[in-house]
Image (cartoon, rainbow, N blue to C red; front, side, top):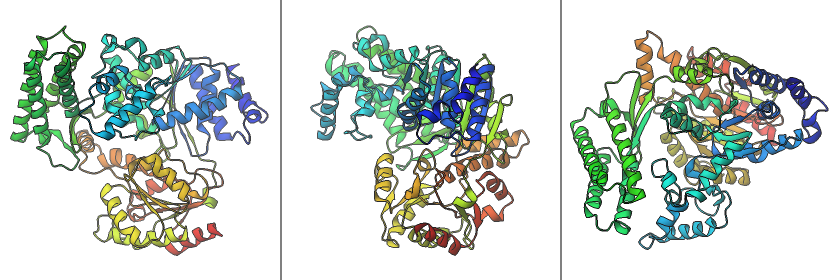
Length: 640
């Protein structure tokens, strides 16, 4: 009966075509919907690569909603969450005429914390004017909002310094001890999610919940019968993060800042607490100063061998121990003090683990921002742990993305995730790539490592961008190359050049669409999750094959692990990851049946190296050329 209802929904005169203007189910979409139906019926796992244009969202939503089961739908970003919840989900629910309770649940940093708002708004005189102004706007909004979702604050900058002051983290949340516990927006959102039939979350929230349950803190999400991961190619890295350990100097400094605020207001009779917290904050800042100002990532095992780092870390650890003792003597006097004590205890335990650099099977790495240092311990493989999660109970799991396969197979993804027992399905895009698109790999470009490469790529890019009258994404594998091109390109073009980092991603995309004849320069975040349809975008230039940086500490650790097992780290780790990343970038070009355009990959290794064939085999079947003039002509014809 369930299967028949799914088939009926996608039929020519079915519920979807009757309710949605212009809807016509495609064969790959029906295939995917029936495969998802089977997984739900059997309580089994399914991995599906659905090429761009398959209509995968409806293909998993229809069976999920018709199943009558509790469903968790997890996607890659907050933007995609909102698109699913506010656009796709209501469309399908209306078409199917189903009374299904749905809920959107975000991470805690997306909800207003009434206690922290009161705490900071009441002690704001010493703050800078812009911060005071934002706090005043948030205060006004706080009495109007129903959801407490700070995404409603469209009139405040996304990076406003006020937002961290009025939202909570797992570290600083007081839980049941909070004076505003009964009115907590996060609590209300979680309660609603637990009562819903279908909850839309994102991957970070899902795995944060898994990690919390793993340590016995309880669960954020309801018990689920069906789990669907869209943008599932992101999961291996995100899950690794949550199955590991990490500690940031930001955590320690925030903890000290909260104690300072309490000592200035409620515990003025406790100068020792304030002095001890100040000392920890000072030593924590000193630790960060041992690295250059510019952000970097590196191997923590190696960095830990430096005597000055060991000494600074010992001083921080000792100061944490001193603060621990002072706080222990102050327990019961104040909710914030009690909670800081718990967080400090956890941070001490984490720092101990992060100093045990002899541990095997994990990667120890660090990253710095301009102000902070983060230390990380990441498992090299999540396969065993994740396989246990998926196959431990009878439950349906669906993993889908436009980019999961490498060389037309799922071996790489299945090995990463421990999903060797899952059913798989590979569905090609319904687009006519031979007619709609051309792939240009320009002749005579130097190797990407050659100092002349950037200048040569610029000479190739300018005529293409001019022929296309802008309407171009120029995607880079490094910020260094992006900055070089951002300085050089405007000198050769009269068209607007938009550069990632100059404003928020959302505003940059809006400017690109409104301007219509711009070129947008971007790195990682523009390679995926960006949907620009029609002739607004008809040229995508990718500087080179997106191999991860060889000095990436997690990559280094996975390399070493492969070598110890007698395996080829390039073939098993680097190449598959680069193929999936490239497929994401390529996917920006053709988003609809009427889209046309040119894809340029400025990397001769596609043609000169044996592994180039693996990349080419994994890309859509566009017509190919090495002649710049042919690509310019193709773009000029699109303008006629």
